[in-house]
Image (cartoon, rainbow, N blue to C red):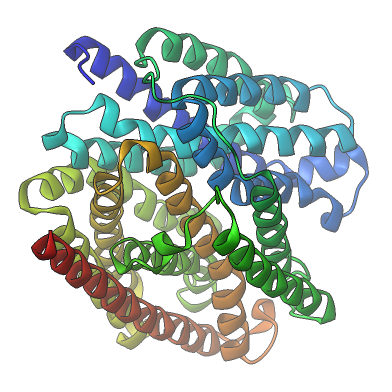
Length: 464
């Protein structure tokens, strides 16, 4: 598809803003939870659904939305997603508590379309030789949104109260909608309505919701309710695979998931997201309890990771374009493995430098992997499957995030041997080492999965 250079810049700016707004939608709400609990007079368990409603909607719907974009046209569905995100943001700022939860779920549906289709659009608007750079830029925008959310949310709440964190997104979304209408290329004539696997999409959404609930309920304790949801998710997976194998027009072709060239990068993406969420769970406790930093010092130290991700995204994409996405993604995983191994081995007596230096290696590796792996997956997909592939990538990342928060958080708590708030500095340091030892094993598994996918891709290319 041929578009002018100025149109390419406008389209990439639009896609970047879609990713930025979607990331802001998650991180900006966390800082408002105490204020929302006071304003509506609800408990912590109730107010946490302001975050969970958005996360569940994005996680459970991103694959179906991506596939629907392949069938009816990415541009029209992306425009609809941006519009819904904007209107839901407006409604969230004006709603009662129950209305706020409903608005957040609708906002998550719009964000699912923005995330899945923004990545799927890159191949249509960026030159092939610059695909990695464009993917790296989208990764940087995701990091910007995640890092900016808490500070921006705090400033908006201090100035205008909690409604401002939602109302803020409405005019920005409207501006992105207008930019998208002007800059995004029209859908190809072949992008016409076709059969959509509604039953499969619904079953997948319910299954993913059950898994997310199993990983997030219970405030860090895995009890009977979590087990019940996990069993429901397992049954849902089995039913979904059976349905898709027999369907005439499946949502996800099972042979796609069995293909190591796609399955390897997806598994690696999930494992990487698990580890990165682990750093966010462990970091504040290690910095404050084991290293003795105050709240401001810990906050500044925690900001290093997002800052590196923001700065390294575009250079990582350029390296992927120059040296090949497969090589750069493996190099990124190797750097993450080295960083995790050092964090597991270095004693807390080395102080802040002994924690931040390996964390910097881990984060740089993450930026390399993210840009290269996204390029690797999307470049290998035909135009009519890019929405689905993007949805699967975002799904793998989200599942990794919720798994990392639950599983690595459980490892941390178990290794500390008791409540974290009362744990001795030595116990917290030991627990941190345990989490990063597990993270190193996960990164080794990710390398194996990606190498297997690379060998499968090379064998397929030779056969062709």
